[in-house]
Image 1 (cartoon, rainbow, N blue to C red):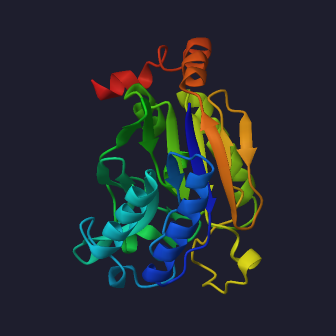
Image 2 (cartoon, rainbow, N blue to C red; image 1 turned 180 degrees about the vertical axis):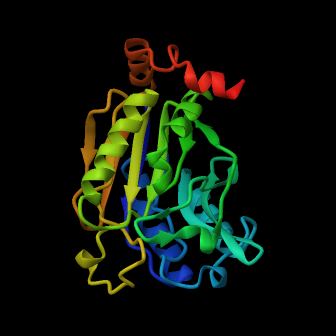
Length: 269
């Protein structure tokens, strides 16, 4: 078993203030036994600000600050940030603590529903996994959850769970799509999917640009059979869950979706 804390919190435009939030919520999650503490996408600074002004490298002060928090509490911390890439940035998940310090750059950019993330963000191209206490975790970010092949690749790379920080854009039907996609990716990859979203801005009185994707809340954990294991409401809240890798093995044995997959396997040859 691996205990994971999902921190459904709102980030501001102030990276230093967001770092204080990370320390506060990490302390609470660690006190409840979490070995992995997850924060949403865009945790260093929310969407709606000029991203190049808040971008820092993984060896910069903000990422080092998060690493210090992870080391202080003896956990792995996952938190969204932005790293420099010429005149654009990378939408990066910082993964730090327990001897790890690396990043996953979001592969699928949110050029949808009238938003164009690619105008300011450069895409990544490398899936990432990390092992904690003999449980392998894969990573995806927000819009990535619409693409099954990434999750199946992470499963084939040994992941029992995929962590999905998000700042999910609101709108008609979007909350329902979020839950549906988390459950679908769990079922079609035979992994736990742990979706950690930013809260609905209205729950914290936040006035954000109407076109910026700033969360709907409802962080959701789906088990490898696609069942909702746990979920939150719209506002700030901590969710702590235990991930059982044996459940992933049972799902893959029962559905055989990875073993019987032909199109994806042929496409890689």
